[in-house]
Amino acid sequence: MNKSLKNLWGRFLFRDKGILPTTRLVLLLSFISLSFIVLSFFVTISWPVVLLINVFFFLFSLVDLVLTPSKKRLRMTRSIPGDLERGLEYPVHIVVENPTEHDMKAEIKDGIPQSFSRPFPFTGIVEKNSRKQFTYYTTAPVRGEYQVLKLYLRYQSRIGLWQKQMAFDEKDTIKVIPDMTETKQYLENAQKFLLHEGVTIRKQKSGVGEFSKIRSYVVGDDPRKINWRQTAKLQEVMTNEYEPEHGKYITILIDCGRMMGAELKKGNRLERSLEAALTVAAAALQKGDYVAVLAFSKSVKAYIPPAKGMAHLQTILKTIYNVQVDAAESNYAEVFQYLQLVQKKRSLILLFSDVKTFLHEESALVYLKRVRQRHLFFMIGVEDEILRKRAANPVTSLEETMIKGVAQQQLLTKKREKAKWEKQGLLMIEAREERLATTAVSHYIDTMNRGLL
Image (cartoon, rainbow, N blue to C red; front, top):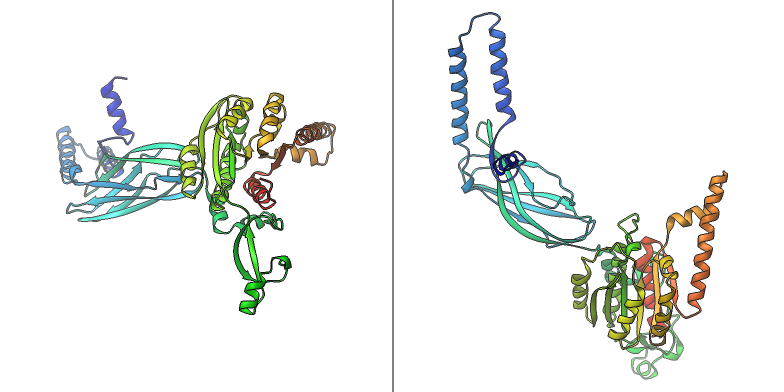
C-alpha cells in the first residue's frame, strides 16, 4: 500500500482529517434510488430526468457541506491528571469551543493508549458561540510513562448530510504509578489500617525509646512512668509517654525477577510488592526514619539512597514507579554484595521476593550471613494461594489424592527449608496478597517498638 492510499485509509479510520457521508445521506440516496425503481414499473422515466434529479440532490448536499463550521475556528483541549494510580478510575475533561453561528453535533475520541479503558466515541451538542465540557472516565491497568498526542473530533453539517473529522495536537505525558490506596489508608489512620487486617500495633517495650510528651494517666499505663513533679503541680496524675527512637535506617529490596511476574487476583507479585514497599516507606518516613530502596533482578535496576522526610516518598515513587518484571532469574548474590558497599550503617533490610525461589539460592546464604552480622534481615513474599487450597481440599478420587499429596509435600519442603534459614537469623514469612502491606508494616512497627534495631 503506497503512501497516498495509507493517508486515504487513515482518514476513514477516524484519524487526522477527512469528509464522510452521514447515515442520513446514505438513507436519502437509497430512498431516491428505490423510488426510481418503483416508478419505473408504472411510468417511463427518461435518463436525463434521473440524472438531473441526482445532480440537484448532490448540489444540495454540497451546499450543506459548505455551511459546515470551518475547522480552523474550532478548538479542543484536554485536562487529564499527570499521575494515574494503577487500576483506579480517573475523570478526563475535554472542552470543545464552537465560536460559529450554528449548533454543532460533535463526536469525540481521545488518543489515549490502547491499554487504557476507552469509552469512545461519545457524542453531544455544542451550541453556537459557546464551549462545552465533556467528561469520560478511564482506568490504566499497566504502570509506565505514556504520551498522549492527539484529540479527534467528528462533527456534522447543519442538515446532517456530511460530517467532517479532524485531529488536534494536544500533547500530555501521563505516568501510571502503583496503587497508593493502602499507603493513604495508613497515613490517615495507622491503627485502623492494621486492625482492619486483624493486626494490632504492639505495645512498646518498657524503658525503650525517646521521651515524647506528658499526658494524663489512664488505666493500663505503667505506674513507673508517672511524672510525680507534674502530678504535684497540677493535682492530677500525669505520666510520661515515650516513642521509639527516630533516625533508624530501613532498606527495602524489591525483586523484579522472572517469578515476580506471576499473576494474582489484582496485578502480579511485583505490583503487590511495590504497593506494600511504598506503604512501609511511608510508615518509616512518617516516624522520622531513613529509608533506602533498591530494585533488582539479574542486576541492580534502581537505587535510592537513604533519606528522611515525607518528601522522600515522592523521590522513591518517581524512581521505581516504572520498574518492570525481567525475563531472567534474580541474582541475589550480586545485590547483597552491592548492598554491603552502599549501606554501611546498621539497618532493617526488608526483602520483597518469592520465598520458594529464594530458598533454593544456596549461594545467597553465604552473602546473607555476612549481611546478618551488621543488619537485621526480614523477607516477605506472596503466599501461593492455589498451592494452599490444593493442600487443604478434600479428596474424592485418586487424581485429587495425588494432587493433594504433591501440594502438601511442597509445603513441607518449604517449611523445612525456611527453618534452616531461620536458624541463621534470617526471618521469612508469606502473606496473602491482600495482607502483604499490613504484614510488612506490622513487622516494621514491631521491630522498632521492641528496640531490635
